[in-house]
Image 1: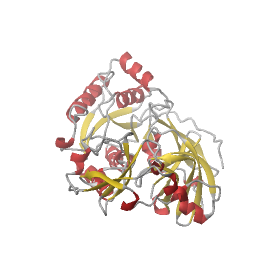
Image 2: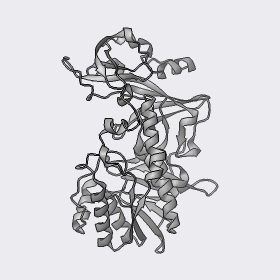
Image 3: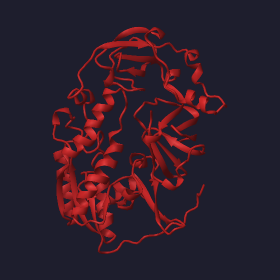
Image 4: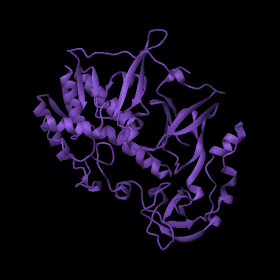
Length: 410
């Protein structure tokens, strides 16, 4: 496997135009400033993706305040500013996806989809209508380029310099074409350095808190948000005993033949008689694996964690304690149709295996794993069992600090 790349240093051309997604936060503000200093013709656009404020926690991320802050930054930098309403596309591509995934008992990641479907697709198309050469965001990640043996540019997506803020995971579904049109100006900076630069040039967003929640929506009241489409459906909460023997068939072993791979990666079997009823819930589709709060069931020695949801039988299974064996799995499976390679030249063919580092959620510490390519898809076996794996999440694998590929967990 190739690991040493001749990195090309591409200097910006003075006439290049770039559209920056100004979110009203300090990161995108500094990104716009840095591009301006590099000689780009910069245009700022605020994306409005949501209109229903009834589900947002307005004190956390009001879109009007964000839009005004983005406008103030553009005025200070002396760049054109526009507000782009992408709410219809966001509803169709992201919100409907969220509803469908939760209804099926899966755990979606709308931020990953927002980058693939909105920021670097719909937004990119809008940027091209303004004759822009690139789109830029305030993501903490980096991009490098090298030429393959045929002289074709290959784009590498690298982790940001700030390991505490690295956001490469959120871009794990981008392709080579999208990366070719993307710029990440702050990827080589740490968050404190970004703050200090913003203070130095007196940007109005210099001291603004980081936003949280759904991409360009803000922090939402998730149950209220989901109940727009998903109706409450009461069911039982069943506590599963802390008994490793119940999950013995899933324990890691050294036999990695196909049948063993399938067994390792298969979700645990849950059934009502394996535990006892300790309460009721308002809808299994409102919860996700690993969740601790929100059930309203207490009185236990250790905190209760959700270990499984059954949306067909409307049952939520829970276990006591963060170390409950049902929370941990030694492997996962990704269907072939759900595989995505940022680096197509490194795609595994059937029968191949490779060593990578992997994470299944933002900011999770990378852990070693082995990928095994089979006709039906790819099995990923962890060096150590991983906690809280839920169908619908994205697994992303790295080689060093480069993000190589990703896929939706089955």
